[in-house]
Image 1 (tube, rainbow, N blue to C red):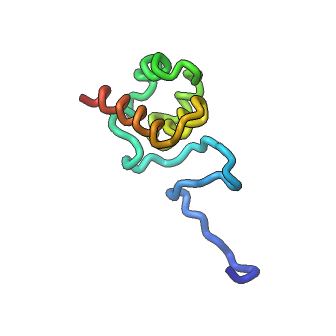
Image 2: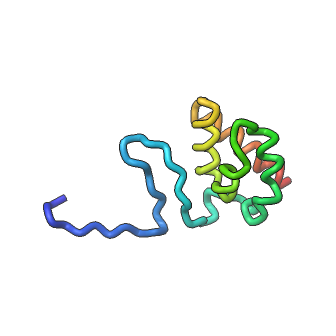
Length: 98
């Protein structure tokens, strides 16, 4: 990119932490990363905390039911591979939406 170029950041685009830093950022929900359970996420917090006891309900609440954010949080909190974290998150949402 040429020096002096202006870069426009679209607020609807997901953000990533620089240099691999783990950060949870509130992102607009476009429906792709969340299922209907996110609309009532606070009612599901006790169940989520029952599964992922290493994660506080406050940190779970910050994800607002967003699968991407929740997967990242599970990955970091349990030191597991992201694919395993995503599998656990998918299973949690599948049980809540059936």
